[in-house]
Length: 163
Image (cartoon, rainbow, N blue to C red; front, side, top):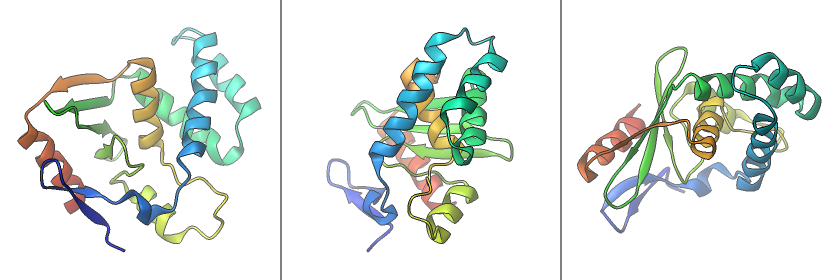
């Protein structure tokens, strides 16, 4: 199975979401929980948010979610949208910028690549903090959005595939 496919709408390579064997519902469920907690508190009440999350999330998810919330609230999530409404995210991480694709749960960070390729326990989540940050920022409208050309989105996608 190929890592990339060609998007028939614009003849651009895109990540093949089937390669990762992930359950998108798991990510949606996680984002629902986080969204609920964030709706209970002001963004400045980070300590209270973390306490509540610690009660409802597994230890596997807690640290990644807290980091993701911090990235989203700190405006480190940038969304680039083309005229055809294709979007990609550039996340300012601790060790660099990472590309997250809107519809395929894929990130260019090494943590994500390692988690997907070396995961033995299929029940463990493979979603890195950058994917979670992008989804939280989108849901809460915290991302820095910019309209760009089809070519610019294509270039960002290619940067992600080549990294």
